[in-house]
Length: 107
Image 1 (cartoon, rainbow, N blue to C red):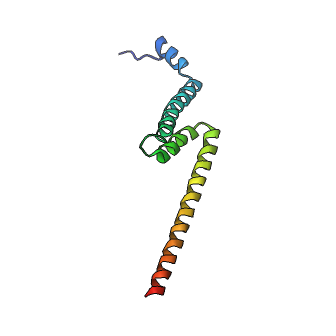
Image 2: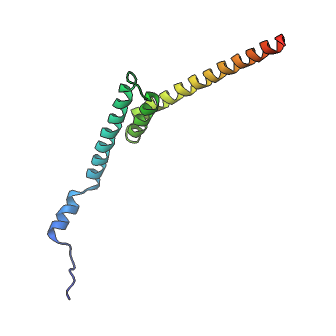
Image 3: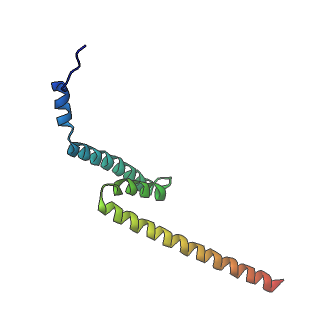
């Protein structure tokens, strides 16, 4: 039985067409389409009922795998949300301390 020593011509053409650059471009297009779709759904959820503040960072995180501007936006978004969260916790704890002080003073 004879074994082929070289690849068939059609297989060579296929491998030539699938350069590394083509794969990178295809990956970037897929990431861009999926990330933009998720981001736009998140923006739509700002006015529609739904978890917009969860979906928007997910879309930015998908886009951040390929784009530096998305990384910057994601960093700003997360920092602002963390700051708001910490301020809300601080206010809530101040209210609790004030409530306990009032309850202690009354009774």
